[in-house]
Length: 171
Image (cartoon, rainbow, N blue to C red; front, top):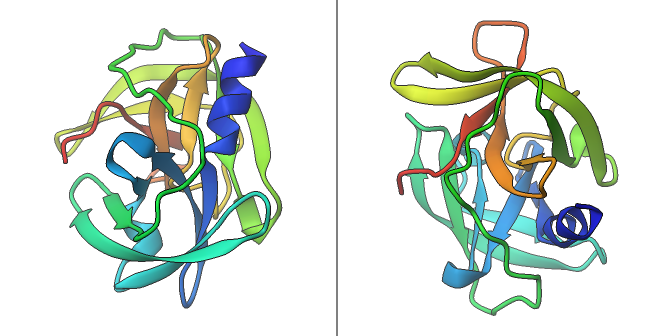
């Protein structure tokens, strides 16, 4: 499991806008970065910071405010690892890991359990977890104990809980 999380960790980046930071995930098949819409809202270009501290400029080319998703393109391809995104269901009390860059800090991984595996809110399916998420974690992956990406961390919506948007996403 740690090998899969290490590979996913290497595909997680920090997204830097003019006013905030968030997290993102590299999807090698399309040479794009996935993050939350609320991270890049109002931006056309963002900086993408890699774990080795190098930066590139990315263009926000597709957004879906309803799903709170955004996609960022870059001109050059990246040597980041390819990750797999499957429609993997999680179970209540299953262990999960939230990856990202909270509070503009270095990369972190927090552990928690699934409180509610399928919470529907405004036609979107969410995973509720007690893994610690803070501002900046938005856009990073939620990973299960098998090292599979099961969601994208997102901000709380009107409720004091931690949420992840369930994968797969509609582009």
